[in-house]
Length: 309
Image 1 (cartoon, rainbow, N blue to C red):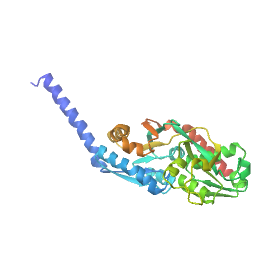
Image 2 (cartoon, rainbow, N blue to C red):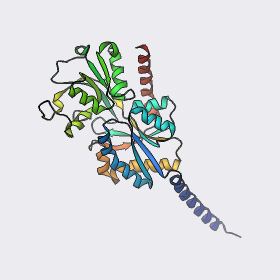
Image 3 (cartoon, rainbow, N blue to C red):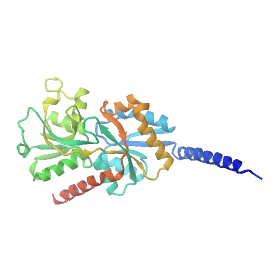
Image 4 (cartoon, one colour):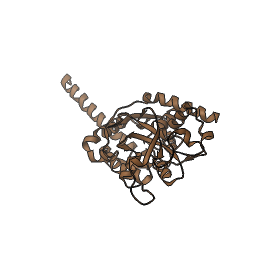
């Protein structure tokens, strides 16, 4: 007769074997993972920031992780909708759009910035050398936006302007969709727009400062530009940072391993983690889909504005 202690030992061995088998199972099912990020910056910049982290993630998970740099914000939404993108990094509006349209995506982490905490701002920039001191000075001028699914580069600016009684299609001479935050700033410097919408964390950290620090912005005489060469005409309330997500359908063990790899990165791969934000982000914090309920309501409001215009 088998003793009770032996039965318990066998049960423990079976449990451990089952756990190890389950851990191995998801890797057999997903030998490669596709991770897409929205094009907040131009492709070369996005690639240089994210490639080291994707390599770290692959080593931690024990599978190949492919970086997918989306052509536009909608590409991440549609890629997760089709199941081709297992992981995604969204802006808060594009993720809210994904949820609103039934994409089975689940938020698990978001950024925390040293200066602006769990959020950031939308700002409208003009050149400091321009005569524009207030929004009314821009009537009939050219307005640059990022992408229809960009939070700070489209949804929030249109919301703010509506609250000020401004209908963009009637107020501005032309509205230009540039495709990325870098492109908005470059268009402003190049003169094809007079005012541009983009994201901003603080005086010391923003899309603008990242471009300045990389030497991407020059004056007509070739001298480097500084923050003093730009002026903010309008700044939004705090916007929640966009999330890192995985498909709801992924195995629980796989999700757990992904979360563990992300949250370990600030310690295990500090240089890689710091490279994602030029050292301006604190460790990621957990987040859930419900954190974007208010943003869903905002984009529904802006959708209504589009229908009226």
